[in-house]
Length: 392
Image (cartoon, rainbow, N blue to C red; front, side, top):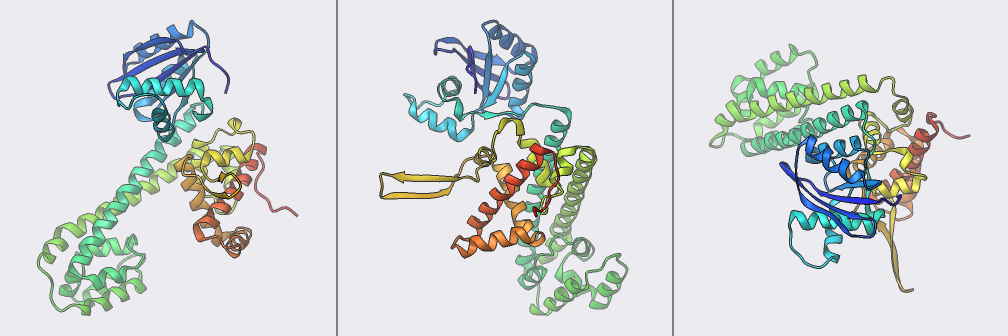
């Protein structure tokens, strides 16, 4: 990273930020609070820009930090952010252990000045990326909410009929099951209504899951009487959870469709999805988290993603390698899941995974190796703007 005439550490907050500015030799230029207001931020950054080139470093690039980043760019300043783990480690090196906004801003500024390699690049904002970031954020919230609702639904069912809950297997998000639970409430409602009525209702559905229904009906005989509270759970709690899961699934599908519309003419997206195991979620994660111009090699991108090996060595007797715990977690998760999906669709990925397993690596370690190999290909695809193809 280039050297700047002024480095500003910004400890961001909801109502105000704390600004700590240093010149290139470490002299204090500013140490004060500034309101979370566009005009105040632009005035402060513009004034500092009169001294030369300015780097603004934040500890939170999204949400409460987004306005500060936008104003810094409008004022002609470069921007970056310091990850929380790096900030905590830097704070431990500096004297004192107080936790204040002023000290946090000072730690950010000093780290940016003395160890610029600890900073992370914030990709240039544009309309497409901003919209994809918003959609990805909404999808993540919906996914987390959906997981919570699924856990609640399973908890209600295991309370009143463990065998019925076990019979669900992995079909807990099946549209047929969710309609079934909204219609009958649960195992005791199905039993009270009668098998013939349940089967008649199933035939009226567009896509009945007969295998699932057979398992559920077979489980009903596992218990003779309903435990206390079962009727209320089936009248209120279980149908409500099923409705929320249905709504959240529809929300996630709508988000995916909107992302597809945004990306239909975007060349990097078309190139990425040509690779087996790369779907819309992996492609979106790559697009919003990676500015390919900031990485001159795939190895540096792998380090940024947190899937490059980390060496441990002390003298000549202790040496080993492990996967680093740092990196961009969202990108790392997307690459890991993509590698897992590729095992079913890409023979070359399966062959490489089996090779790593034969070498003695455990499942997760082999997947990380595969994810790094696939990231190198994705890097080349986006850099060269050419679709995936098998060499030979």
